[in-house]
Image (cartoon, rainbow, N blue to C red; front, side, top):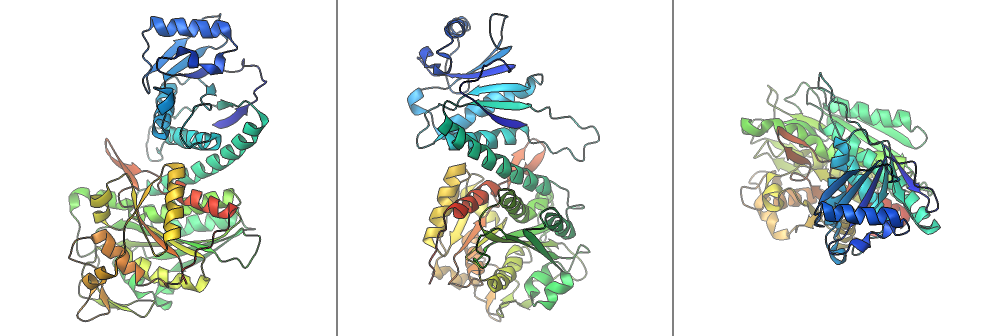
Length: 508
């Protein structure tokens, strides 16, 4: 599928479908065709004859006669012109392209929607969100279907622009939108893989494939279970002991900054490729969902892939912290005391609180890279779902400016976060009688106490943000769950903005 900017001076005769928007109580608002008097007159008549009501998402599909310039015309109701919100804009796009998907013979579409007046949104945003939304509609994962239903794509989507300045803005939006959507797709593909294939070693192979593809700017280090133990990452090491699929930590170095010595942004993704809960066994009814417990690592992989494709002016280190938490004769047990990479000791109260054990060691380890920022992404707590549902990602940080910038990036791409506190007072819930701290709190505020636990392993001088994507990493569908691809858009937008503007976060 190609997105093409259509020159404002070109002839509209190469398309088999025209898409127009009409606003409520104002048929003259079809400004896009005001120079084509005949077409405008016929469309007005058609709308009146069909009793077309211009509410958001109402669709009128016209197979045109020979007097029309277009084989097919889709008219979409856009509601009140003064109150077109960003979410209504997305609704319009979805309605239109879900209809086009049914009419698989439509291959070349001319789109007249870019002049919509959306509050605080410009042309760049409208094209970015257009690409994001259409990519989501046409996403299909059928790798393991014996009878594959082909997802017949539109061949070309022509976006009408009206001057040279719009052409320059639109070109940039398409370049960014396509490469970020590709990162989202890759993340979804990995997340949707079954756990008998998507193991920690599988992630290591995916990481190596980036080095093979982008040799000039990418270097990858792979640490297996023995290496992890030698490093002193005993918390990480113990999580994977019960499985035959041993732990792997993959570190992807992307060197894109003009200044070679520029501090890197470190991304850490929790990659528990299957989580039974260990000895503290989960309820079997929903356990199949636990293949998505590696969505943090998948989203980090998708984000660094997009960053490489966009050739961002940044140094980025992506760490895929992968393990499998199942029951075996070597599984770690409640009551264990483990010495972490940092030197702190942790008493294990719950083996199902394994993600924070992996992350605590990696958070301590990544200090060696002298990072500018640390971002960890994890499906960490069910309590985050209880608090925020599946709309917003829970965000915790030791830096207010960093939280603000992430919040703005989320608004930019409609991938929102919600800031939750890391109160010092919550540390008392993690006290242990025999170790420095415990890995689980029996009190309420589980998402917060998990973030508090992680904060104990972060150098306070380094700006850090923790994203709990337990509620947002997946979407519920008819036959279970699928990956949402979140928060690849959010991460990519944050990295993109940092590439354009060198932001300094002061934690000293």
